[in-house]
Amino acid sequence: MFLLGLVPIVSYAFIMLLIHSKMSFHVLFGVQFLLLIASSLTYNLKLGVLTLLMTLALTAIVIAHSIYKKADWTPSLNGMLLLISFWGLFCFAEIANPNHVQEAWNIMITHYLVYPVICAVLIPITIRNIKDIQWLLIIWSLFVLYAAAKGYWQKNHGFNERELYFLYVLGGARTHFIWSGIRYFSCFTEAANFGVHMAMAIITFGISLFYTKNIGLKIYFAVTVLAAIYGMGISGTRAAIAVPISGLGLFIILSGYKKAAVTGLFVLLALFLFFRFTHIGDGNTYIWKMRSAFTPTEDASYMVRVINRERMQKLMITKPFGYGQGLSKGAYFNPKELMPYPPDSWLVSVWVENGMVGLVVYLLVHAALFAWCSWILLFKTRNQQLRGLLAAWLCMAAGFFIAAYANDVMQYPNSLVVYTAFGLCFAGPAIDKQLSTKEAEEKLTKNT
Image 1 (cartoon, rainbow, N blue to C red):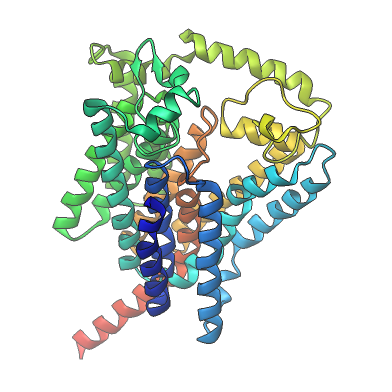
Image 2: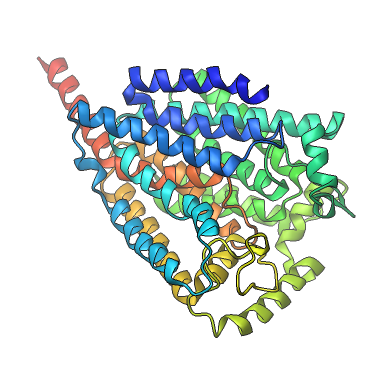
């Protein structure tokens, strides 16, 4: 019955997509959040398969509609597509891995390649102005507010049937009911994913509100930040604090505005000094837990991870191309060989699945993406408001990848949000040119 209830929503999304093709990426963006919410209410919904099918279907409609309208596809042939295609070649080459399992590869390719390619192609032709970027923020903010409210409900009213199934049948209680308290996970697959996503919202909306002219929208984004801070706190995810701190570090470089850089540096230093050199708020479990992230060598669970990675390294010497994509936690697929130690983060998973060769390719491609996007913001984006909004997204992506070293957080809906950041940066020059032309016309009209 619940799935039948989704039919009107999905049908409406398709109709809106056909009528308002310029909002196509916004529809795709919003659908991801709706599907995640739906999956948190029933355990019969296969989120991975449904999300992939829905994404491909919506993308196919957009492409068909654009061909019919004879749209200009030149913006889609950009540096992001080039870099992601290079990584894509490696992904397809991994099919030849002796330990390859096609079903596992089919699932993992969504995060590895499908979302990055879709963002590289669709965003530059559908996101054409600042208002489009703000609409993406508004859509995301609605989900952030819902996720924080859902976390509040779990904390104060308990778990629903689907969540109890995850905790007591699937074994989630082992990692969510710990000595320091309960780690709440809202509508997400688990607490780390929830906490990091909320941290991503903190840095994105925290920066964006300073580059939003509408007072009402500023206040709304500020409320979203507060909700996200609450959500990050109750998740009990220590690595999440790395997202806003790392993001602020990049923002200081990208702001291009002395006052903004000084403000960012002040906030960054204040956060670091508060967590690293004070004991203020230690009586609060969530603050104390976040503070422990600044002294990882004193944490027993962190040291276990260090030991496991040393053991993995010995096994990976003979696996330059890894165990196969999708098999870092692939016992379900019964591969010929399986890593005996569980990877504890996304980047470790990339290493286990693709080997040192694949990890190097992956890191180089993403380092090039960050460098290229930073160059676009610094030298190809003159409009201060646009630069600030784009920097907010890129700083979020930087913080995400720092957190991805500590947690396995490349899960729904994080992957689409992260690659949206890169796509927006590559769409930036066209938006900036449009703004410059508009400003020039307004000056000309005023002078005449």
